[in-house]
Length: 487
Image (cartoon, rainbow, N blue to C red):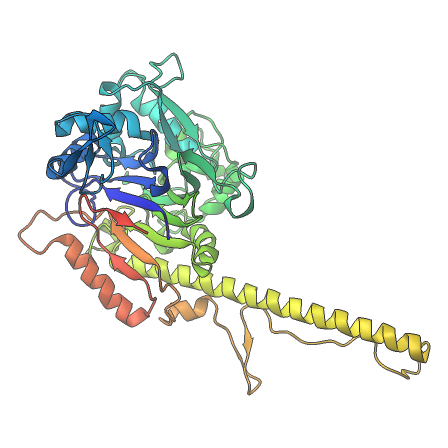
């Protein structure tokens, strides 16, 4: 069991993608093994923050008992903060205490306002005894430096460029740092008490300006602080065509205006690992489907997730589904609808198939190697008794025997035919329940602000209808504001 709690801080179904300003993406995550220690609460995005924590406490604050060890402390006895010792009587004061003392790190998926505004506003008003950590990919950190903490949009609260020192940047290495951790935790960086993380970049669609769109700015040379550090060639590899269908040449990537080169918004997907148990959850920021992306990168995340699913380590996937299936492709704006979420999960199924195929092949090769070694030992024993055997005459026993093993992902059948349970199976709707035991938690649903059914209910029903057809095996969950989710 994942010794962790995940607390959605946005209102309504799907915890939430707006358009209400109090319904923007925010989660709190902790390892329950830390027992509410100082700095043990991780904020994953913070579109809303202090206000949401205050509302939760207003609902559950009456459920408290005096702490025998200190008459000035109370212990919450209900709600998602159950077991937390609080020092104040009002909800707002205790919310301030939580943000100041228990929340230590903000893990930001991408720098859009609906994912950062709560953090930005709250940080200036609630200084603690040490700077808050702002963690993310270098492109996210650069966006904060250039466009938020720049003394124009907001004061420079960071500890760089002579700032106030209330925020310190933590730049994560895409794919995990090879110098961090060991064993199954290799590449993971401890990000707060009890939790470690590994990150991958994903695409959040392209800009809506009227020009030829190009691939991710994360792969461009650092011609400006807003850009990433990877090579230009890798950027050109990711996106070799424009939306008009024209093949882009290297000369297109060498244009001097960096704003003309960057069109794809970069977001992140985080594997969050509970250090005590080794169990993980996967949390996506805003993301678009690979099938329509100019910079498709979701497959690398699914490839990383597949062995964790097979091993039973991955308890849940938090992924956005902003709109229902009535939304047209050209108005998704870098988001998912149920048909595309199912498409991405089928891509994950394909990766699970492939991983299972590689595992079977390794086991077969190991068995063949073991039999081969036994035969070699047996041959050496017979040679010592019967004398040498001429390779020309072929007299005596053979020293080696060969066994043909099926290729990767192909299982031999009794009639001699072969079946190939590889990506093609997933595309034919034969999910084979390979995601059984995995919860898919749908987030970032966007309220239609009409009198119809809640958007989360509509999206959930469409996903359940797709599941009947595809048989993926996962359980779909649409959380609500203030839910305490344990995995």
